[in-house]
Amino acid sequence: MLDMLAERIATLEESATLQMAALVRELKTKGEDIIDLTLGEPDFDTPQHIKEAAKMAIDMGFTKYTPVAGYLDLRKTIVEKLNRDNQLSYSTEQIVVSTGAKQSIANVVLSLINPGDEVIIPAPYWVSYSAITHLAEGKVVEIAATIEHDFKITPDQLEKAITPKSRLFIFSSPCNPTGAVYTIEELEGLVKVFRKYPDIIILSDEIYEYINFIGKHASIASLADMYERTVLVNGFSKGFAMTGWRLGYIAAPLWIAKACTKMQGQFTSGTCSISQKAGEMAMTGDMQPTKDMCAAYHKRRDLVFNLLKEIPGVQTNLPTGAFYFFPNISSFFGKTDGHTIIKNSSDMSMYLLGDAKVSTVSGDAFGDDHCIRFSYATSEEKLQIAMERIKLSLSKLK
Figure (cartoon, rainbow, N blue to C red):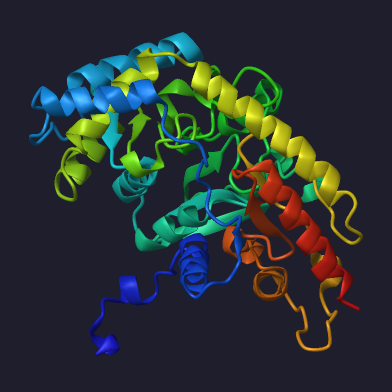
């Protein structure tokens, strides 16, 4: 009966991250000792004051349907946050709260992209950018950002990728999967190109804003001429350890915000009432837990970076945000342990899962088959053991 499925779902790729995570769960139920570095999920618990706000919301009766774009109080809080942290001025009508930043991105792409429209995406990129673009029947135009340039594209690369069909540019900073962070100067270089092409909308995924090791976060929407053509995407999952709460949002030009509200109204309507009240507290309450989490990630980053440097054949950059490494492992292509031949990043991920009992995600899912991604959002002890296992497994490849 598979031939009865709609073409859009038959051709839609399953998320490689979720696919590997499901495999790891299956192996763990069979008793396998797997160190899971697959998902981009904080290992910290949601801060207590945020949980208490959710409990209070239940007791106060916030258990009904919510406005499609989100509670007005939460949208006011988001407006205040953007003004406070990013020096960006929005009205509440320009904010749309969704069931996670992934839905926010899907709303934007489905609202803007017609069949054949081109969406420019620097690679490596988060796996869902390309999948959502294909779902909207758009064409993905990749720009290869290499490890030698810290996985960041240049203005010249951007200009060469633009055509009369270019409609949308999607990127993240801090970046999943590379941890790269664009400085305000680097963003200004890209903006000089965008100013020549006023019809291109920019989708700026800033979900890792609070996990930044180089200082103040820079948003492309803050640069001259960009506010009216930038959709800022953010959420609560990473900075506040609220992945299961499913809460994200956009801040956008009013015409795009209205379109996304219309789109969302036919898919999910308003997101969870209890999560929204918790989100209010996250943005207005004590930020020290967020700062402490960022400091812990920074320490783990340094630990893993030093351990990776000790593994022959592995090339890595120094991530300046988020909580991922995206090392280049292509020097092992064509090598074997006598049983498995490593031909690509998928082979490497499966080899490490089987031999080292460490789960990673193949780089081809992120647009770069030379690399693999793993998260360091886990304990230092597990990271130490994982790197030791990986080093031993890679030493077997000749």
